[in-house]
Image 1 (cartoon, rainbow, N blue to C red):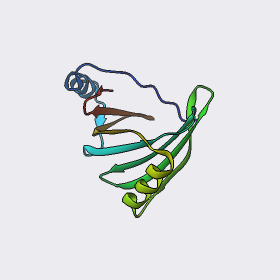
Image 2: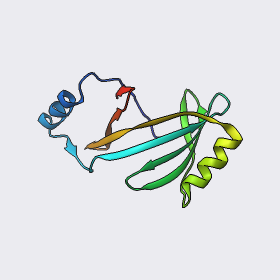
Image 3: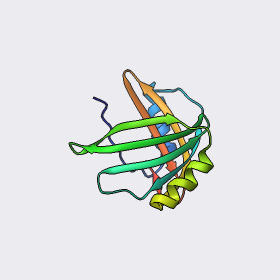
Length: 120
């Protein structure tokens, strides 16, 4: 089972310098993203995620204190789908920013720099 630990960080540059000093490898270009979340009942996440690699419809369900990915599929017409989901559910929030990816053995480390929210 995939597990995730999220932490707020104060200075991503210091964290990245520490990762490099430990020979943890940066493995991807910086990825820009816009995540649009739609209103859903508690325990359900529905979002359209847009990034350098495309547009994706993502659906998550609460499971044992974490979230299970139920759907993560590429979409061809994100604006049309965003309008449909907005009309049906309403937009809860939009997050914009960039992600940087590192790898350490079997672990994937992602640094999220979210505009007007913070660093994680």
